[in-house]
Structures are given as C-alpha cells and as structure tokens.
Image (cartoon, rainbow, N blue to C red):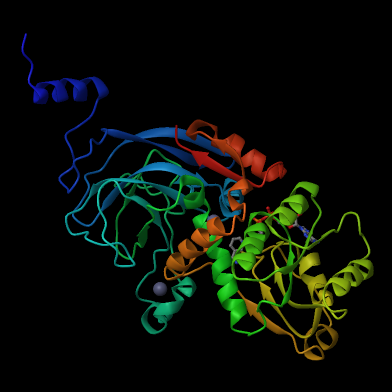
Length: 399
Ligand SMILES: NC(=O)c1ccc[n+]([C@@H]2O[C@H](COP(=O)([O-])OP(=O)(O)OC[C@H]3O[C@@H](n4cnc5c(N)ncnc54)[C@H](O)[C@@H]3O)[C@@H](O)[C@H]2O)c1
Ligand SMILES: [Zn+2]
Ligand SMILES: [Zn+2]
C-alpha cells in the first residue's frame, strides 16, 4: 500500500489528537488542548485541560519549558490575598514559540522573532495611567500593571499563566523578549534577576556603589542571593551577607560574599554590628540591600550602615507589617540615602540578559540556586517545599 507523506501526517495527527496548525506564521504542530495547573481554592492546584484558542494575528503561542515558583505565587496559593482564584499562576516562565500571529515581527526590544525562538514575558502596562502616559521608563509603577501568571481565569483565553503546558501571549501592552542564547535555568532565573537588576539601578542613583564599596545584603532567599550575584557581576567584591539558614549562608559564600553572619548564631544586634563594621572600614557598610520581608530585620539594617551610606528597601513586595525606628539616629543624623525598589520595567529585561551572560562569563554559580524542580501535576508539593525553606529556588519544569 502506498501512503503519501501528507496522509501519514494526517493519520499521526488523528492518533495524537492534534488539530491543523493555527492560521499563523507557524509550521509547528499544535495540540488541540493544553494543560494548566490551576489554583482553584487556597492550597489547591488542579491540572485542567482546555482547548487551545485560535492564535490571532497579534498573538504568540508558547510551549512552556519551565517556570520559577515565586514568593508571590506561594502567597497567593496560601490564601488568595489578591482575590484572583481561579487562576493559573507562574510568571517566571520561559518556553518555545510554536505559533506566531502574522503581525508580530519583532520582540519588545525590536529583535526579530520567529517560531522556534525561546521567549520570556515581562510586564503588561495599562498605557493609560499617569505613569504610563508621562513616565514611560517607569512602567513598573503603572497603577494597573499586570503580568502573565496573575490574571484571573477566563474561558476565552485559559492560557494566561506559565504553570501550564502552553501560554498564549495576547492582548494590549504585553511585553516579551527572545532569549535564545540563555539556557533553561538561566531563563527561569531571568525574572527574579530582573528584580535585583532593577534594585541595583535604584541603588546606583545614590552614587554609593562602586568597585571598592562595602555592601550588605540582608536576607538570603532567592532575592538576596541573586542580589549578591548581580553585585558581583557589577564589580562589587566586598559583600557582607546575613541570614539564619546555614545552606543559604553557604550559598552566599559560593556566590562571592566575603563575610557571612548567621543572625541565629550571633543573636545580639550589637555583636552583628561589630562584625559588619570590622568588615567595612570600621564604620559600617556604604550601602545595604534589605531583602528579608521581616520588619525586625528592616529595623536593624540602619545600624549596619555608615554615616552618609545608603539603603535599598526591596524586601516587602507584600504587606508584612510595620517597624519603628528613631529617625534622628537611623536616618537624619546619619544622612542615609534611602531608595525603594519595586518590581521592574520591560526595559530592565535586556540589562538582565546581559547580567546573566556576565555571570556565566565570571563563573558565578547562579544556576545552583535552583535546588528543586517539579512537573505540572506536583505544584502543590512545589509550594510546600518553598514554604518549608528546604531549598532555595523551586521551579516547575515541563516533562
Ligand atoms: N522589590 C521587589 O520588586 C520584590 C520582588 C520580589 C520579592 N520581593 C520581596 O523580597 C523578599 C525576599 O524574597 P525571597 O523570595 O528571597 O524570600 P525568602 O523568604 O525565601 O527569603 C527571605 C530570607 O530572609 C531571611 N531573614 C528573615 N529574618 C531575617 C533577619 N532578621 N536577618 C536576616 N535575614 C533574615 C530568611 O531566613 C530568608 O532566608 C520577600 O519578602 C518579597 O516580598 C520584592
Ligand atoms: Zn516573581
Ligand atoms: Zn499604567
């Protein structure tokens, strides 16, 4: 029996349950359905299957390869503080383009884009608020900033989060970047790294960070550890790191911190301040990054900073409460330069890609931060591991 290649393709399609390719620039085969790991109730992620919507002329369909689990995901998983259930989470994702709308010729940076490219998404700005209209370089401060992975479920497009087999990039204001030269681990760390690259940009407005600066990183979760890596790549070699977890302190050393302090071992603030001063010209650090999310730590940090030094508060993406300091001693008399850092803008993405290339060149072992990976049907376990702080960076990796 003679069978033509198109007949073979059609038989294979039937067996695999695939539809014909989307009306787009794609030549890739697209399955009829996609799986999403949907948060349907607090602490309940269920894998569900939906038909893949038609890929429109301005849309991009991505086959997901992996996605970091962010503290924000865990926060939402615990108790739905954002009120967006049902939702498919995951905003630190990456994958391969399998279908491309015909109007899409370039990524957000203007680089050519095609089916088969590796891609990441960045923020979705509203385009209408004061910041979007008047301060386009600061769209991280957009009043209605969105991100794929925090969009409530809709049947019209069920593929809006990276904890899925596929993501459909669709809608006004989406930003995305081609990242073919980065490997999967680097791409899964990109969004997190962008938070730290943005924080460095904010810190640099004080002029206090240079090759010889003594810099403190307080809190060594994924944010603090990547902050150390970003500082190293930027030429800062005198880093003091504080945390309470031995594994995280060890990792900080591996990444290049010169002095590490366990606040669980050195329990007196005065003693910790003495150690920091000893490592920092006897007076305290030039600059400090607050990465804990703990009000107590945020209060202590002023003590470690020299007069005329600076501090970047980046540790409270969520509301964890207040602290009290004496502004005379903590800020005014010391003339502290304080900056806050919130998220990132799309224009921080190319800089972050450059950071990841630099980290690779300098052999900064940033990829070792990924300690655990989970498939789509084990994301409740992934959240549990994150909460228990057994690992450092937890990721979903597609099978
Ligand atoms: N600014 C932003 O755009 C942005 C973005 C993402 C996350 N964040 C914030 O960054 C914070 C850190 O995120 P993460 O994912 O690394 O969290 P994480 O919980 O994994 O890490 C926090 C670390 O702080 C340490 N810590 C707690 N109390 C401390 C103390 N007194 N002294 C020193 N260390 C202490 C903990 O041991 C832990 O290792 C979060 O609170 C999050 O809200 C900010
Ligand atoms: Zn995140
Ligand atoms: Zn806006």
